[in-house]
Length: 235
Image 1 (cartoon, one colour):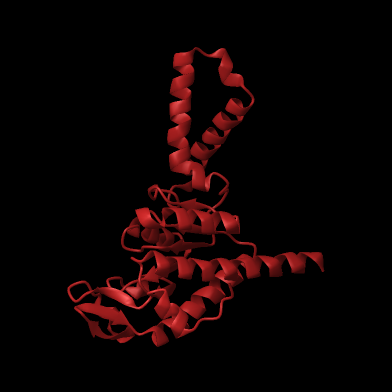
Image 2: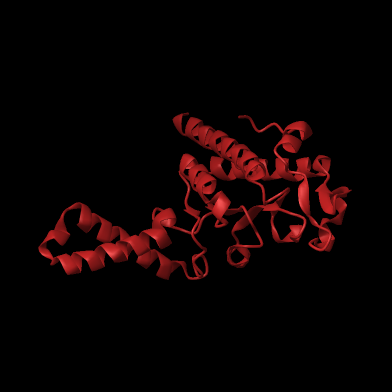
C-alpha cells in the first residue's frame, strides 16, 4: 500500500462519517461537508492536506531514527494498533495508558527493567528453586507486568512522537505528550479539538475500516522513512 491519498478510497473506508449533531467541537466546523441522517459528514477534500502532513511527519521522524509510540486502547482497535506498531518496530499501549509514562519516565523505566529481569530469570529456569505457590505468585506478577509494560518494554527513552487512534479516550496520553514536547499525531473526529494535535488527521475514529486504512498509510510512511535511514547509513 502506498501513501497516495484519494477521496474515493477514503470514502470507501468510511473516513467521512463523523458524530451526531450534539457531538461536535466548534473548531471542526470548517472541515465539515454537511449532515446526513443526523450524522455530520467530514469533507474529505479538506482531510487530505492534514493527512498528507501527518504522513510526511511520521516519515521524517522515522528517517531521523526516532521512535513513535502507538496508542489505541479502544477494544475494536487494540489488535490493529499493536500489529502496526510491531510491524514498524515501535512501542505501543493498547490496554490502558499508564499515567506517568512520559511525565515520570525514570520510574516507569525502573519498572520495565524489573519486568525484563523477571522474564530473564524465568527463561533461565531460575524460578524452579521456588515452591509451586511461590512460582504461581511470580507468574501472576509477570502476567500483570506484561499487560502493563509489554508494549513498551523496549522503549528506553521518551519517543519522538505519539500516534493516537482515539484522542478523546486516551486524552491523558495526549496531555503528557504535550507537556513533554512529544509530537502528537492523531485521528481527529468531529468531537475533538484539532488544535491539540500537532498533526491531526481529520477522520472517523469509530470505524475499524477507517482506522485500518489510516494505520496502513501511516505504517507505509514509517517504513519508507526507515528505509531511507538505512540507505543513508550504508553510504
